[in-house]
Image (cartoon, rainbow, N blue to C red):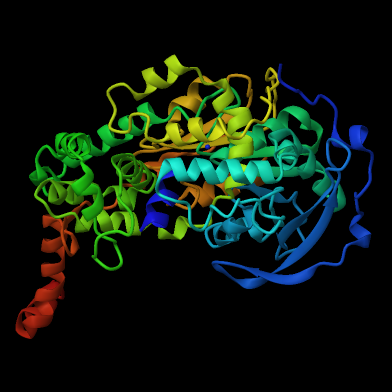
Length: 510
């Protein structure tokens, strides 16, 4: 349990030195391979049955001694149309792009005419992962977590210096050249949108278009997420009130506040493990529980279970809430903590002021539960602050995708902070959580956008994407009345052959 709760709690998606020159001019071209010299091997990724081409690509560092080797997975186009490839950039910071291979399923139409490329950035996934031994089993106790983080930093204080967004962009440009791609398009999810936007600033000549899902603009402070999470929960509450089944749970929102406010040591030690039902191995503190609720809001199908689970918890039954926590067991190992803190401390936490943290936490269920592990951890991870450049106007076609109930990158970010993007469109999925590229007609719109060079899209189909039904009880959602009537209408003739025959005879009457 300690690993599952801590993994959910730390999940994102998450004088300064500014590097103004490309990696090749600062560090030379040592380690830069050529496409002709590369021999890919066949490999596989989780969630996709077909073989992929795997490359091990050496890249130069921004400073001497920072050369590295990156793992790159390519799903080759199925046709000879030879459109520009689409590179997929993972979030976190700390997630591996190779973990996104399952997106090939909803994006298979895009893959017909263009390569899809997954680059594991330095320190993530198959590119010499830097996880400090914390990704698989982070301790539930913050004090212990910070101690282990400090030990990891002291063991190799030079490595975090090479793990910056600037370096990630330079590495991406080197990979593009090695693979022989004249221009590329980028899909970014969550923190991957930040990387994509920085690539657009530094290498506009190499870019065709951008698709950004769960947008984290360059100037935004996405780790200040308490107000966004609160807004997502309020929207869930409003949608629940409009649902005849869900509104029966009453004021579960206030019940959540009471649960978190009254969470004591006895509650912490008795919280059940989602897989055994027995008390958890280590106490589950209130900050972990608040973060578990925040993480549930990422996925509308999980968020739909919250009203029932919280109502049950208020009545003394913690098993449904524990079950929601168990849904995030798959997050174990998804973030390379060394990489996460190297980027987060230098590029997010270093820009946050104490009064901003207090203001963001005020009046929210989350409070400082998400940001505090990073603030305390960064005190033991002393990397220099990395400043971003002032964003210059760009005319590339850009497709923005947001969920109206996203608890960390709300649509407001895309609406207010990206005026310098002169050719942008914005899709907003009502009730959508964090990352919506695989939902409804979004993959088709992405294909149309990429193939059409950014032409204006008919967004009408986005309105058809709805929240999943709310959980009504221990066995899931309730069938809506109209659906029950429709099913009864379809089944009844089969149960009464005479009525079916009569209906058929009536249909042929002149």
